[in-house]
Image (cartoon, rainbow, N blue to C red; front, side):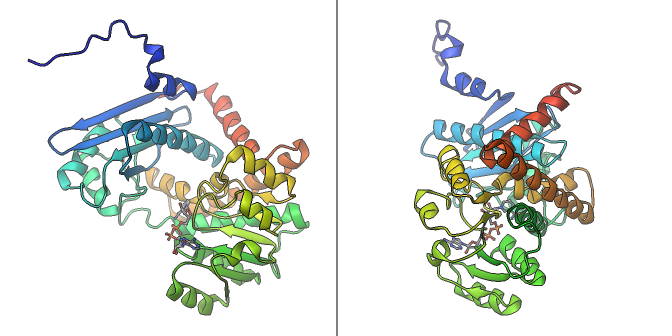
Length: 365
Ligand code: NAD
């Protein structure tokens, strides 16, 4: 016989999980457990006001379940804001699988996860994230249709993401320099991977003076010779005399140390979570007179590409939708200037405004 602990005296509101859920008004949390495969996962649906909650599945060896819970709650809420600001009919969700992605995955493990996703009946749509690749998603897809980013479908999102970053950067230039031309502007692209290389291509075509840094020398050599870009050292990035800094590699590169060194007028790049501390560095960057294009506003091309798969739309549709990032970023920057409020805060407000206004005509799923 097994024993169930008596929890009748526990006040549910004191439960840390319920408390965390209420703090940012998450709609639903699904804890998934399967002893046979060893699967432990959490799916968080933050909001379905605008549509089904879309966000990737991250597999990570968290130290403990609370760490995983914090991550999934934070990331799913972030997706609500990103999807809203991109003007998509999508809510925000995310899943985390607790485990080592190099050793724990198997067909059964991933299909079991797919069954849990399927149990949400389309309220949550999953995609790849850290630790999960297209082959894993193919297993998930055997148990649920609520998956995007599959091989052979909408394909690599990077060209769409890079296009959004490019037009968002031009919008910043329009406000900061009075013209959105990037010809002759010195732009440092940090990271020339999937997104970075496409961005370099667009910048070079427009006649910008492009500097690139990466940890892979062979990649640097190829991109430099293909697009006529100049190679700089990893640390040189923050001390360069430049007009625009485009972080396309890591998060948290806008911090107290780099802000004491950066000599740019604009920060516009694809990396997620660029501000080390949103409140502190979002304000600091504004006080330095630098225009910062909020990361989730300017890099939403990736999620636009996912949406095209949900709705069976073309790459041309995605590229056109990504063009709207120009107006969104311009609006954010202008509002930030007129209200003297950091751009990340304006972006959050705009995302919340859309949810509130659409929420008046639409109920959550
Ligand atoms: P990627 O892994 O293809 O490219 C990242 C590049 O950065 C790699 O070439 C890597 O060597 C380089 N790099 C790593 N550390 C570096 C360092 N310290 N200095 C300079 N370069 C370094 O990734 P990606 O798909 O191009 O994405 C780039 C960033 O944009 C990531 O932060 C990602 O989360 C974000 N993002 C990507 C997409 C997309 O569509 N791919 C969408 C939204 C956001």
